[in-house]
Length: 70
Image (tube, helix red, strand yellow):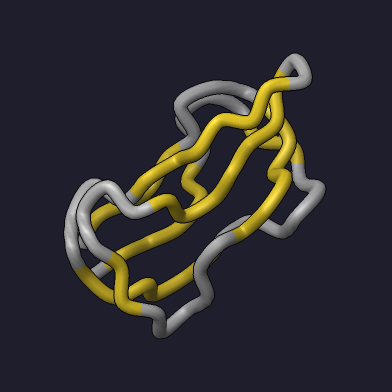
């Protein structure tokens, strides 16, 4: 099991996956917006999205868990 974490503080601009989706290593899971820049956050390994812990518009801090992949 792997956790996808925010690499920086920002707002969740767009969620690109749903629970049950298959993802591949380096596939973008969410896009954060910080300082008017869009920052993609990618999965670190292949697997199935077990849980998405954020909603669009949520604010996350660096290190916050965004999704869980197994």
